[in-house]
Image (cartoon, rainbow, N blue to C red; front, side, top):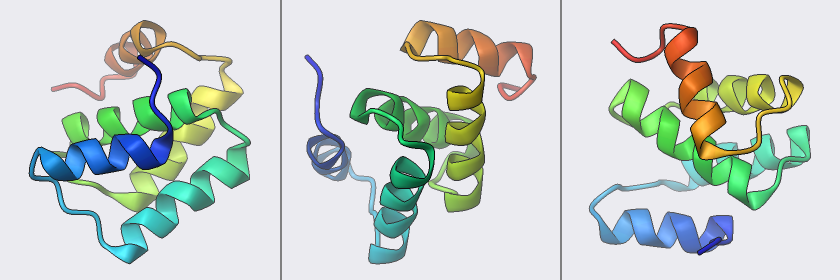
Length: 89
């Protein structure tokens, strides 16, 4: 199932993650800045939470920009890229 970014944020909030207005602002800023799809934005949010253990807006925007520039569009490709870059410790 492909969720919109709004649906994905709502889903994560239901799982206990808390996104303030500033965090949501970063999410939509990154989406607009990179012209990324909802799917890629959701992947970047998930990877940010996995790597940082919290939502870090600067990390998210940088990651989303990097994924977009490297033409990475799937979760599998994004996770492989993150491992290759040493983001998972």
